[in-house]
View 1 (cartoon, rainbow, N blue to C red):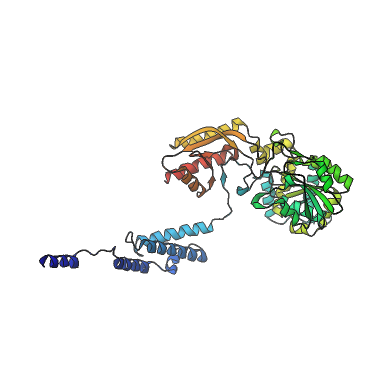
View 2: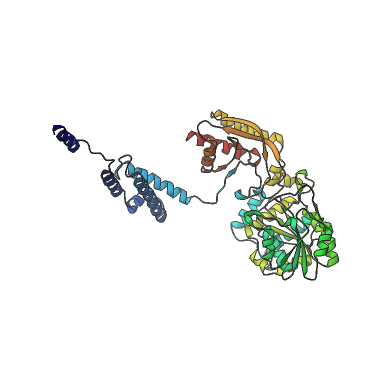
Length: 487
């Protein structure tokens, strides 16, 4: 009996256990009540725009409430008058800062992929940047003829340059290469059939497929030959009274090797002349600079024009090294039909891209200047000495900070669905860390400012100097050091 009373006495007078369900509920309710109101916390952010302060305060309080509920009220005993209020203000300011930061912003590309589609493809030459900024800052001659004092055409700014560089009779520029192909197929093939090799029914970025682009034009696609072999005779058998055009598509993002055969562009154009049909050539990446060994697998635009294509379509932001654009070069008759089609207005290029494109085309008049000043060309042709010096620069900065780093061999790529077999061997700066998982380091670098996008291979982080200039390489190395110090 005595033992039982003693036990009940200890139970009644001993310390209260707050981890019990009732105690935890009471503690949680108290902490939730102590959270400041949205208005109270927002008032501490009076230096911020009102709407931003309110949204940041609401987000910080909601996050803290969820944290308390998920933990059952456990944790440090902070109150709204103490450290919890300061922590909430810090959290709210961080949210406000993140909300004010642009979503589309610059990154450092340390991947070695020159035309990285997800990172915006071709960086612009300085002259192209200056041209775009100049036009953006005020009014311009976009569609105004200064000589006549009357309305002009935006195409006048680039048509002569495109014709000069390609040898074409006429040219037209729209907002991307897929749009150029769509416009050509619509203007020249609607209501009829367009013959194309089965081996050229490619899928381009974003899961868009050439057959779907052509069918959207209102034309009917006729598949010719087989996946690996399509002869001129296959085209000849496919042509009929309903045929409106012949389409050649360069397989930019893959190659078929082995037992393969295809008709040349010259053969297709000769067939088109005999049959009275236009040939549309989707040349893909826009190889305007010739006699460069690395570009040997790309069809020169000038060759397709010389062969007699009605319209040659190619990209502005790939090998041409300019802004996103779809260039169309060919015969005056075919381009007149494209220009007159209502779709041309829906697909027209904007003034900023047009200004950057004009400046880039002017650089391409001088191949030596182009390879020196257009970033894509400069990165493609970068020499071993330049790349090694930049890789060593990053290694030295990292090792001075105590980060294990070495310079070793790696392989860069063109990317952007261009030259898929080309591997650009060269030095890379490779680093490892015992303090943080390398995958986690890559994540933290992407979350930094500026974000650094790097490759991870075999447990090491690779910084490729080919897609970084000297300043960017220094920033990338500094970002790694700063990130590791925060671990």
